[in-house]
Every structure is written in structure tokens, then in C-alpha cells.
Image 1 (tube, rainbow, N blue to C red):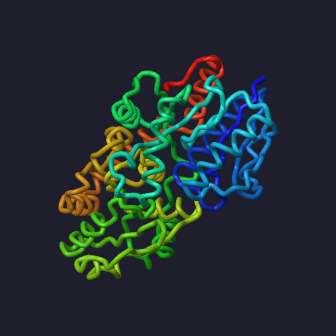
Image 2 (cartoon, rainbow, N blue to C red):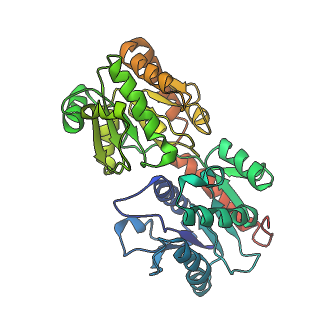
Length: 382
């Protein structure tokens, strides 16, 4: 029996982001596959039903809230090591990246680094956060005894950026929740009435962050509207606009609907009711909304950059250059005007999404943990 400590810092009840969703599903699967092991889930929030992943899981809270870089340093380098030693942990599994500092070099640690957007575009982050990530993550990549990521693109990027071997990096992909499934005609009409005043719509899902290229999407939508496009646009994410919108976007503001953050059930309805997902970020380590749309029977227009062509395979309705506003607008018009092509993309999407599952991701993580424990005395990469 092994005693395995788990990073649950990003399990935020009611506010799961992408990495938190990955953490929740993968840890549930891991715990179920290892009933004879004991687990310690380390969190930084009050107790919640979400944290109780199985009968072999003990939950402990570090009261220092890991919300700022200097607090994160204390969390992972002071409070966490003290707790792991007290609990007599055999290993640490961190599905968001950071290792437990101040442990002996041979103490086995597994890290998942999802992407390196902060290395390539630090300007997308507040300076303190960019500095934290860029000073911390090279050491994580080199010192983790087992290093994982979510896509072949990210694995290649990790190896090239940090000068580490590609072959040992394990891939544990994301998957779509079972909540995402095709809606009936009546359910689609309900979604249209709920989110867009009864109008057909395209949907975007994601944090309103510079790397998501929301400005480019809105400019493309404005061009689509000027050229006679009939669908509205639903933006799912934190409902705020920093700065004044461009004049051409302001002209079609009545056709843009801001849903804010949605709970998972409502999100599944919002995606399932759409005519298409239009998702054109500059940079993605994976891109969960793509799989969720395919699972919901919704065709996908997405960027032809970073991990997205890998995740889509041949299933996208269109892959577009995120810098090409005209191409994005043309893809929206094609979604509206080419029903046969749209149905073909839906069929390809259903086949593609079936190749991803949280069960399979759990199996891959379980194999990585077995590797971690079998090489417990071996050094990291540092």
C-alpha cells in the first residue's frame, strides 16, 4: 500500500476552470483504480463534498490561501512539505504543476504542466504572475520524477523550451463531460430563448483572457453581421469588457449576448443549443470546449494553431488562422449556409470525441503513478 498525496488546490466548488476540471475527473479515476492505496487530498478551502473522492481519501486544508505568487511559494515550499512529512507521504501528485519544495531529492513527485503560454507570451499575464511561472516552471519540468502534459503539442513545446528529453513526457489528455450531449429540437429552442432572446446563435466558451482572442472573434462577428449573417453570438465567460469596444463591434452589440460564468448543466445547454462553436484562441495546451461541442453535436470552427489541430483531428468544420478576421467571418457564413457540410462535421465530431474519455485519462494517470512509485529512488531531471 502506498501513501499518495494529491494537489487539490484548484478544486474550487462552483468555479472550476479547465485545470480544475481536469484535476477533479482524473483524481476521481485515479482513486477508484487504486483502492488499496491511501490518499491525502490537500486543499486550501473549507470542506466541500467535491473533495471526498473516495473512502480511501483523507482531506486536509492548508489555511494559507494560494491566491498570490508569494502565497503560492509559502504554500508549496513551507506548509505543504510540513504536511507531507507529518502524514508520511510516499509521493506527491500535482495535476497543476508545482512540486512540494524542501523535500529530499529522491522523494517521488509527478507534475502535469498543461502549456507554456507564459513563456511565449508573458505580456498576456500580470507581471507578477508571469515572473512566478517563468521562474518556477523550468525547475518543475526538470525536477519532476514523472512529467506529464495534455497534448503532443505541449510535450514537444516542453522539451524544446526547457531542453529536456521528449520521450519520457507522458500525455494525459482532457475529455468531455457526460453532460454534453446532443439536444432535442425543443431543448435547442429553450436554449435559444434562455440565452439569446429566441435567436439562433454561435457560442464562444472560455475565460476572457488575451490569449483567447476574443477581440478577433468579435471583429469577425461584426464582419459576419455586416455581410448579412443571421445568427447572434453568445459569449460564455466572465462578463466584463476592459476598454472601449471597437466601433465596428459596438455597431452590432445588440446581437452579442454575455452569459458570464455558467454552472456545468447550464453550460451544456448553452453549447448544445448553438449552431456552432467559434473558438479562435492564439494559444491552447488542449482546448476542452472543442471536445465538449463535438460531444453536444455542435460543429466547430477553431484556430489552426498550437494543440487545436491535434485535438480536432479531421473533425473540425473549419480550421482558421486566428489572425484572419475575414476567414473567421467566412467560416461563420459557411456554418449558416452549408447544412450538408455542417452535418458531415457533426458526424466526424461524434467519432472524434469518442476517442477521448476521463476513464482513459485516468488509466494513463494511473500508469504514470505506477511508474512514479516504481522509480521512487531515482532522481528528477534537475
